[in-house]
Length: 96
Image (tube, rainbow, N blue to C red):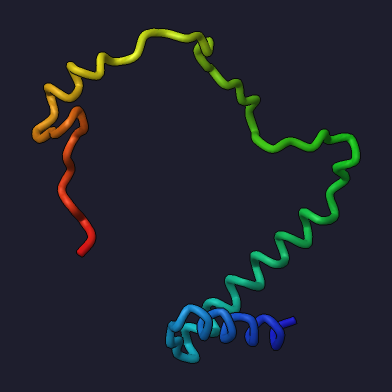
C-alpha cells in the first residue's frame, strides 16, 4: 500500500503543480495512509438500517406566496435614473 500511496501523493502534487521534497512526500504519504485506513474502517460499518440522507438536518424552504402585486411605477423609476432618454434608462457602455 505504501508504494501506491507514495505514487498517489506524487501524482496529486504534480497535478497541483506543487514541488514536494522527499521529506514532505514521506510526511504526506503517512497522513494519506492514516486517512485511507480510517476510510477502510468506515467501510466495515453496518449501515443497512440507516436511511440515506442528503443533509444532516432536515431542510425546509421558507418561501412567500407567489401572489401578483403592483410593480414599480415606470415614470418614477426613469425619473430616478442618473441618465434617461425616450423613457429608457441609459447605462454606460462596457464593451469597446
